[in-house]
Length: 308
Image (cartoon, rainbow, N blue to C red):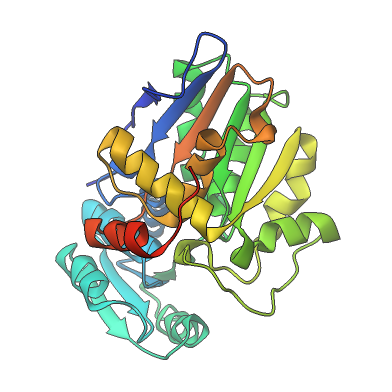
């Protein structure tokens, strides 16, 4: 299955006559996250070059999206995951038609094997977030947002490695919407983008400490750091508890589960964060994620004091 045009809906409880909170439901993509857009673009390029196999080092959303995209385009996907990848995630990727190779205790070790496998003449390496074709694919959601809500004043997006953010910036640049504010959201234990913006270039975090595992990139891609300055922008760094609150509140309101990496963006709306003050039309990208369950959300309610 290839990417679908996802709905843009008003949040049923947060929108008022003075401000509208819009939700771009990328969690409804067939694989559960926005990543299917970029992975499909890159896999289509692989097919156009006569490749028959794509290799992706990822134990999560990128790997699953690559599996879906490859199957939809008639390619074989080889997903290299570290030993820390949950068995349920491995099974999900296999069910999507990919070969799962378990190698190394760290992503870096998995990545080294993936690079070696991608040296085969019929193969193409598919990175999780740092590739211009991925960004081009992700940017299609901006085309859809502007068609449905041309008056958008701010886009709220989570930042892990920077692939989604680069897609947002690519789309806004294509439409010359430099007036649209970009709000980049991270958790405190994985704020590599905020650190990069402050330094003026990507920096490597000494460690990652967050429940939002999909944000766990120690260093972000350089391109979005360089280009976000063209827009009014703000880096928002919230706590794990606030991200989990976003997940729990969204589950109550929309009856849908998303990862904390997505919850941190939703929390901006639920907290009425100063970053969106004065903006009449705010679009929150509900980026999705598959590493979440109702049991996990229930555990948070029982063990963590979530912000109201």
